[in-house]
Length: 75
Image (cartoon, rainbow, N blue to C red; front, top):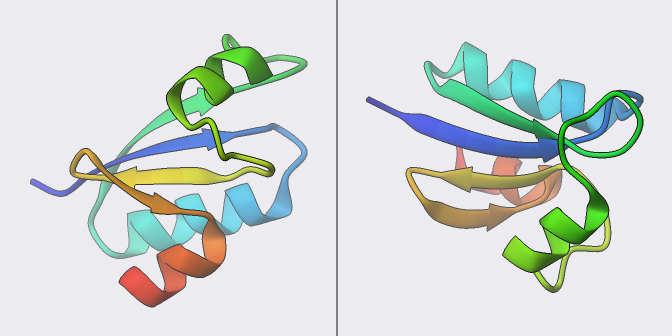
């Protein structure tokens, strides 16, 4: 099965686009929402991905992909 983890924020249009693209391509998604309304903090994100500057940050099958642009290239 194809699995993805998406670090996101609720008001992020690229996060929504990334999740839609993953779903269209048959991925099951675990979303880690940071900030207001989320269960995670920016510190949690930076502990997992120290170089993260923006969201979304995406892992596919436990491999770090990057952001939305990198996702487009990977799918």
